[in-house]
Amino acid sequence: IKRITTSTIRDMKHRGEKISMLTAYDYSTAKILDQSGVEILLVGDSAANVFAGFETTLPITLDNMIYHASAVARGAHRAMVIADLPFGEYQGATDDAYKAAVRMMKESGVHALKMEGGEEIIDNIRKIVQSGIPVCGHLGLTPQSIYKFGDFGVRAKEDAEAQKLKADALALQEAGCFAVVLEKIPASLATEVSKSLDIPTIGIGAGNGCDGQVLVVNDMLGITQEFKPKFLRQYVNLFDEITRAAQAYVADVKSGDYPNESEQY
Ligand code: KIV
Ligand code: NA
Image (cartoon, rainbow, N blue to C red):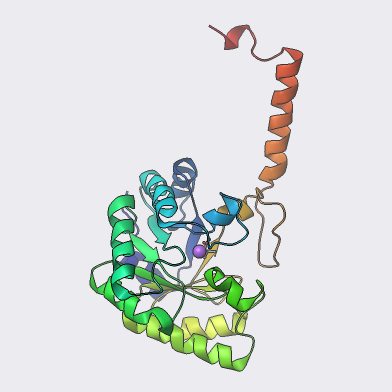
């Protein structure tokens, strides 16, 4: 199988073929998604929420992310694997950001990194890109800045923030990013940004004008129960399915039905 690369998805944008991306945090799920035809697997720092149960993405560490990322990389044979750099690892000195990026690449085996922010981190992105590491930007609702925003509401509804987002998107492209995630912004703004950029945009809660879409896998599989934003399409209710299976198992153990003759040595 031929591996999806940054040039594959650039060509997809130019052909007008939409790009699909899902998050993954473990080997087994990565294998299923990879053979399902998803072009990009994102080892999101949303692992902090859906895997570890934290309220925000801030607590997850670089070591935690490397553990998840290496598991996903081992499960993906066709998809391009992108890993988030976690909060605190790339917003300071360029040399520190560069070292975190190199550690993630060396120790996890992923193919690219994602970082939240625009102009504020552009020098660090430029340095990492120049070292040969593909970088995906992330603008709009950037959850690592949740305490700056105050809530998880739609971003860039006001003109000043929309203008900054457009300038940031161009800056990311100029710095060498191969794609940019647009999270929870008005569809009209995301469409305008997507048209203005040569690199693909991947939207989440950013409407149909993006070049691709991403969802958190636990959300689209219906494992997550409490999180139901308007943009989320739930394709299966695994919460109910797993509940049924676990209840049936408990009942079988208690009744003595499991294990039966054919299930023992
Ligand atoms: O961590 C994550 O899951 C993400 C996507 C929602 C884009 O960054
Ligand atoms: Na993330």
